[in-house]
Image (cartoon, rainbow, N blue to C red; front, side):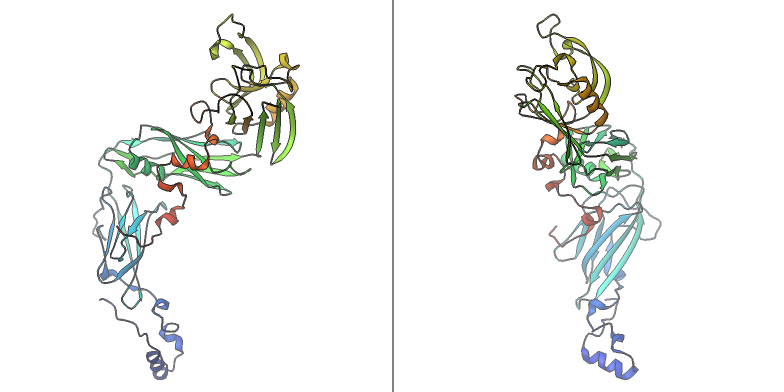
Length: 416
């Protein structure tokens, strides 16, 4: 080995104290090898990456670290942008191998901790650069919605420029798409289809939170023909926690702000055959005036259910045309009966108040209706109608357990 074993016995320390007249700490605390400064383990550790010879590592190949006589205890690999590389350490500590792709055109620093047969700690640090990708096809990613302030129910959306179907490739993509919130909220991605992912917390976002969506995919290999490209970061903030719950059986809506009820509104919801959807919906937008026609939802013109009405203070909750809106023609039924074609109707004064006190991303929930449950995807945001266990099953990362990048990079011995 390239280093000299350190004295470990009490006798050795005593002799040094007598000979040099020094204090006992000259031997490094109580002689425990773990208290000593790490020795240079350069001769004990080898990499499959170039070390200062001007060559660049192939990003298509995993990074491997091998020990000679020493045992590897920990490996941390991180690039100049702060992206950690996850890996797996063999049970005997002889070898570590990265388990996710290296980025192309990146500068990496690898720190390896070791110990010898006596338990003394060693250290080796390596820096290297990776080459450019051999192909130029890049995956475009667009985060949504637009930057701004939203309600606590607003999911984050990632739209991909091309489909990703393979589970392993999806895992690479998902691992590179990050969403952080302050205050912290546990969350996960869910694949809606091959080109779209949604991210939501386990519960609603905290009120007055800052949410940032960003990507670590730039330069990361996804497949032989596809690499991650640069992605514009997204910043959202949340306002008050506003939740509106409509009970179709009691014909009443209760609106709460930050867990305090602030208003109760008599309403009417969908009549039989046009029952309002049950479940959680997220406000998609607000329109002061909307012309509503039955033909847009499949009602034949001239039929008994046909209508063509000017509608004011319309708050949209589905793309198919469900709103919370002013319905002065049904005031006599509001609070008593369900007579609408699926929307939630209220007086003009109450609709104006609702319009002024709700924002995009706020939560509108319907209970006790005879209608179907709100669609999870495709007709707005029904994301919250999946419980957490089902939501995380839509993640390409096993278990759905969320870890920080640093936690993911920290390693415990495991069989390869």
